[in-house]
Amino acid sequence: MTAGKVLAIATAELGTKESPANSNRVKYNTWYYGREVSGSAYPWCMAFVQWVFHQAGISLPLKTASCGALMNAAKKSGQWVTKNYLPGDVVIYDFPGGAATDHTGIIEKVAASGVVAIEGNTSQAGSQSNGGMVCRKTRPYSQIVGAVRPNYQKEDKRMDNIPSPAHKEGVEWARKNGILTGDASGDLKLSEPLTRQQMCTMLHRFAKKIGKV
Image 1 (cartoon, rainbow, N blue to C red):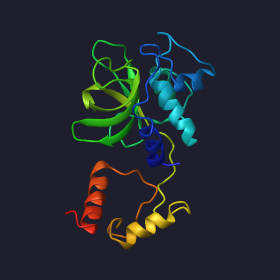
Image 2 (cartoon, rainbow, N blue to C red):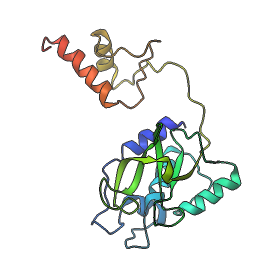
Image 3 (cartoon, rainbow, N blue to C red):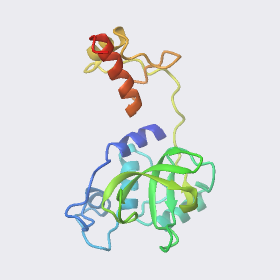
């Protein structure tokens, strides 16, 4: 399994919330503990990460709900990095005023000033390490302790141009009408997630096709 597949699973969880609010009752905890739990003893940022990797069929160095315990296990297994982060790395944060390892997420993008990650039990505003929701967050490097580098398979470089039977008719129509064009090599990348800008481009092509532009 590749980092791209892991991120696709994590991205599909965006917006998932614990219920009721401030309860830590959420499906990731239910999976991790094998029963429904709630209360302040069950923060779930790491349970979310563990759930995502379980869905992807990838083992992390340790099955744990503790950021510090995963960090220590990764150090022992040689999977701990503190620079040159990559998409798919499990990032560990240290927020001002908190514990040495406060929070975690899965890196989606790396920028000059920090990382963009998919994180469980955070919020767009308010508590960042116990916010009750799966969110996409941008964090500066100053808040990063390091990251766990999972043992991913190498990306398959073969072209992804063969649609599944359920989508064949739609894909062939979009390709024939210039709405789906792929990259410079002709790779349609049919199994990859669609970004907002790619969606806008495809909608614009469709609008031109029907004479609305």
